[in-house]
Image (cartoon, rainbow, N blue to C red; front, side):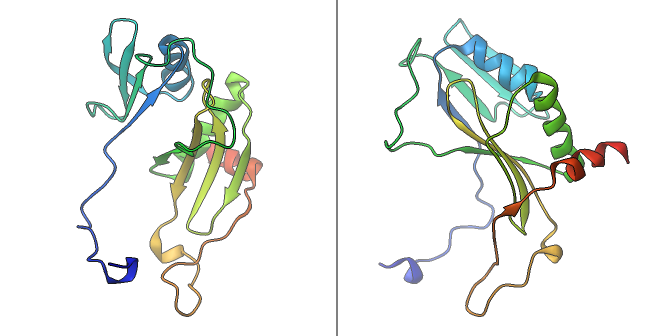
Length: 167
């Protein structure tokens, strides 16, 4: 069955959580909780932890069961490209950027995709992380004929994003 012939998935399906192999759980908690502001929900000894936003049981699992002290996978291998963390508003994304700046954590990229605005960086284990917010669908660019959505990659105005915090 080709992609075009398949039945669409139930629209209520979503991604519940991501579980990452990390070299050092405490170092990862410093990043995900200490910098980004996730809440530690549960800890399993020194080898696993579960963090969330808003009291959910966990959005991100962190474990070193098979990766304690390990190096990140080398470039050119398969695996997770990045974990995308969606913020509810542009102001909340601006707060995430402020947290990164305050912690001295650089970003690898910042893009306006028309439908969303995104910051790109790596966590302490080299796992790609996208922090983004979705524009309301009514503000999305009009798609080209034959396409369902129009997305692009343009530079994101970081000073303009941070200005959200002054309003």
